[in-house]
Every structure is written in C-alpha cells, then in structure tokens.
Length: 368
Image 1 (cartoon, one colour):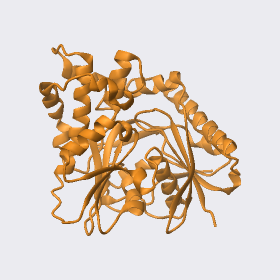
Image 2 (tube, rainbow, N blue to C red):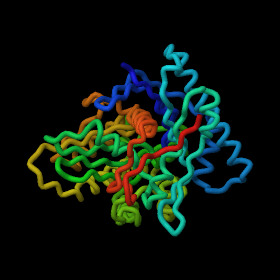
Image 3 (cartoon, rainbow, N blue to C red):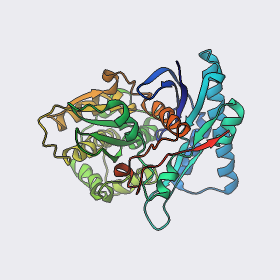
Image 4 (cartoon, one colour):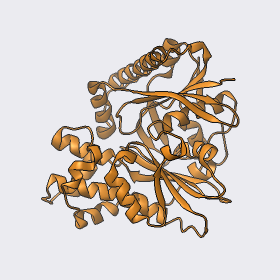
C-alpha cells in the first residue's frame, strides 16, 4: 500500500525548486519520482537582495512571500500533471520555504522562511506542512539543521561510522556513529561564495565541474584569513546562512588585496573543503569501524571539492549518497516529505542533541 507525500525544497543556493514524490511507511522511505523547477531570474534576484542587504519594505516582503507561494504551488501542480499523479493520493506536502534570515542566537532568536503555505494548500488542494523550524527554536533550539533526523532514519548503520555531508549553499553534517548520540550542524559555506563570485565575474550561476577554479591558484594568506571567521570557533549546536556568508562578507576580507579572480575562486574551493574537513577531524573517532563520508547536494557534483575532501580526509571513504540509493539532488526534498509524514503522524522530528532544543517535538504547522 502506498503512503505518498511530496517534499519541496529551495535551498540557500536558490538554484531551483526541488520536488520529490516519496512513499513513506514506518519501515521504509522510497523516492518514486523527482524534478527541479526554475526560480524566475527576477524573483531570484529579489530574494538574493533581500538576504544580502537585509533591507526591505513590508510591502515588498509581503509581495515576495505571495509570489513565492504561487511559484511553489504552480510547480507542484505541474509536477503532478507531468507525472500523471492523482492529487487525491497525496497525504501531504512538506514545504521548507525559502529562508531569508536565520538568527538563532541572541536574546530574541528567530528564523524566517517565506513562500505562503496558505497559497500552496489552496492552489493544490493538498494539506501542506510548513514552518518547520520555529517550533524547535521555541524549545531553545537552533531550528537547524533538521535533516539529521531523516539521515538517522534512513542511513544509520551499526557497522559503519558515517557522516552525511550536504553541500548546498551552506554545508551541514550529520554524524552517525554507532552507539553514540547523533550530532549535526552547519560547518560553514558550501557553494554560496563560489556561486556568487563566478556570477559576479563571469555571469554564470555556478562553476561547472570547478573548471574556472582549476585555472587559479590557492592564496594561502587569503585562506588563512577566511578560516579565522568566529563561526568556526563556535561549539555545536550551531547554524548559519547567507546572513553571514555572502559576497559583502567576502569583499570585506578582500579589502586591500589584488588577487586574480580565478585565484580567489580556487581559494574559495579550498576554503569550503577545508572548513568541512576541519569539523570532521574534530570528531576524533576512536572506533575501528570503517568511516564513510556520504556527500549530497550540488557540491557533490563538483569534482574539485570531492577531490580535496578525499585528500584532506585520507582515512575516510568519500562517496556520494547516490551509492547508497538516495539521489543527492533530492535528499532535502525527500527529507521534508518525511518531516511532513512525521507531522501528520504526530511523531517527534527534531534531535535535541543536534539543534540544542530542550526536548524532542513534532515540527511543522498544518495548512488545509
């Protein structure tokens, strides 16, 4: 018997809307079909400006929230039509929404995802679950990362030390060590700086296969400066996003330097890989079990990043999650389908040791 859910994710990179149809039971999570739909360039630019300048009017914010909700809904309806899926078969949609600001620290922590879920529910006619992060924060957590709970459910293996690494705009890890508490957190930048830098200089959305970075040379002084960012000295639980790692942040670090653009791109690749490897090396795993680093997200397609991770982590087998039966492009969309399943079935879906919440809770809000 099928138990169908749809997961929707548009991540920090904003390179598209990932949609996955997933069959979920108590014992199994199986992705059936997936697709990626583009975000119109003008809307994407509005979102990037919102994230990086942190300035807008209430009118503009409300309109973008509305437009994004309609885009999510239309994309889901196209997905259903293209794949000849009867919407009556779908139990619920799990939609993360687009994060435009994440501030988990301070006296009044908050996070803001937009893309009106009321519109999604109305235009699709399907129960929609959204606003996953704020319940965790209400219980003292970071509201992120949420995917480690899903990773634990589908990828934990009692005979293997596994770290699941998602390299989206921001990189995050889930640490699945047998007989140990699951931990997970954002390690720092993934593709966000790489994509922004090549867009600024070559007008491309990303550096395919790291080809431009390969033409440059790593600048050690710049690399050292980037690695001194305070975030890397913070203990977990911790989470971050575009509100910290963005092009204005990079330009401040570059003040007074006169480096070639391709050398900066090469250095940013090394920065991404090194910031990840440093966190994994901090784990100091004492087990004799084999160690696997399973990579998903857009960064898994960058051979230069994958090569550097293998070189920086010689005792780890660096693989993609595709080798374990989960398409790396779909991982987070599948995870939010699973989070919707948890909400519908009133199951806890955060891991307090990961987010810092004071208890496990069922995340998400139901829109009908």
